[in-house]
Image 1 (cartoon, rainbow, N blue to C red):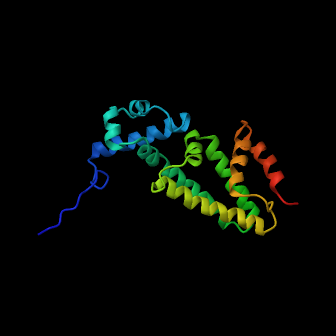
Image 2: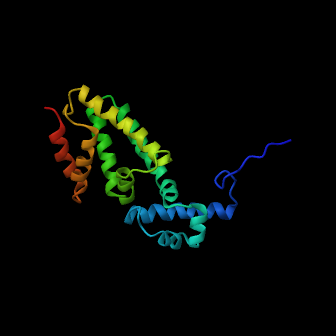
Image 3: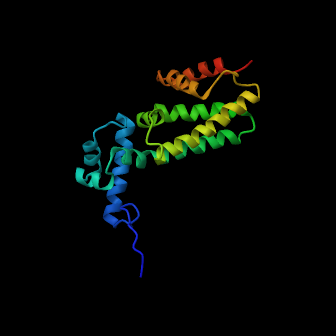
Length: 186
């Protein structure tokens, strides 16, 4: 006798139209959340994707599900930037590269900034990706400190100050440069 197993909605292969709808919803969510933040109205996302709100809820039963689908790829970009920073021979150059890429991502995407600063269910893909990135960021900081390039009292929590200062002005590169001057050991 065969044992039947419950198949979830996400485990079943999607029909072509359902796949297109899902892709349109994720793309629309990236645009709307990027511009307005993750609390933006879901009906605006459905309208932009040219689907009914019921279709949105059918594919993404909760806002958190949609936020995760929209931002896991962005967190993957952040992971790649952190790994590139760790691969650089000079730890200070890695620290600077990481901050430049991170600030650019935040100034261009309000939703990403909110994803980075909010807590999600600890079992979610978003929170797991954020924790993995936090570990990489810790290594970036440690390497720069061990090389004697970064202030020894700098901690991962201080990144919130760096990001706030650098993103507070349209000339974020200049602002980040000022912050980096204050963080570098001379």
